[in-house]
Length: 212
Image 1 (cartoon, helix red, strand yellow):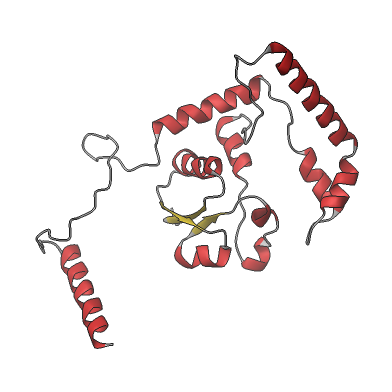
Image 2 (cartoon, rainbow, N blue to C red):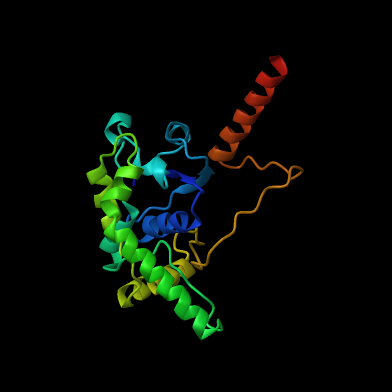
């Protein structure tokens, strides 16, 4: 309930969508989402939480920054009991069967070679703050095959996206509402405390701007 705004690293549309689903279904919050470049200090300067993706997230020293890291995949599984599919190899169903077989054989051989040399790959990809063992453990956590559970997880994600529970709804009809900008020439109606204070704040900003 303390999270009222989240800065979103837009490097991955999938992760952005997952955050919105989890906010609505897992955490029961409806924060304001703001796209931002992946700089944690800048993001948290203007938001209560931040979505970090890829290497910036993996390399982040949460304790050093005084923040808590949440794994989106773990939260998805806790919510649904299903794995989350971040990426998949897909081909058109109309593709020539011989080409499909050739591509499958290539991917199977590539996967086998990669898994057989995983310790070597981990040593080569080790970066600051990560040991080779940690990199290898990270790579072994992935499921490199797409089975019935993954298909069910993908279908579940699609259905939750269609519901768009993270968007604001009308309190009367419960339909999704769309924000509409107020025209600059719209007449002022200072008929409640919010509109009055907002109006005076704007007047103050204009006055300071003219003065300085």
